[in-house]
Length: 59
Picture 1 (cartoon, helix red, strand yellow):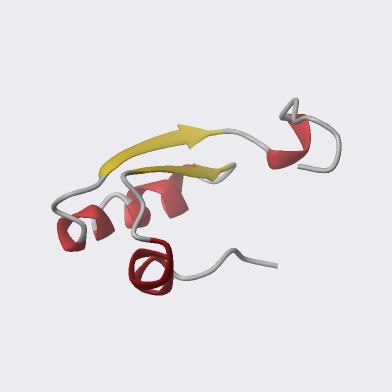
Picture 2 (cartoon, rainbow, N blue to C red; picture 1 turned 180 degrees about the vertical axis):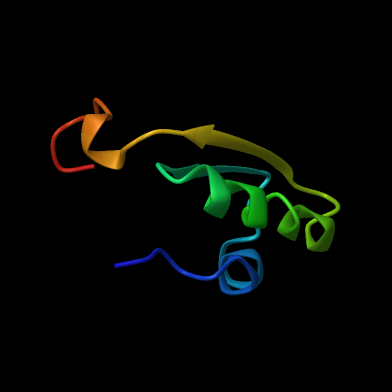
């Protein structure tokens, strides 16, 4: 399952900072092309597995 497409997130949430996370370097490379559509948003990319993240309960 994938998260929402970046254009939907941009229009609905109007984020100021976005973090792209993926375990596949090739997918991160593709994602690095998308921030050109978000000129007013800071975007970082992290290679990793979502399941390894320490998140607060019910977050």
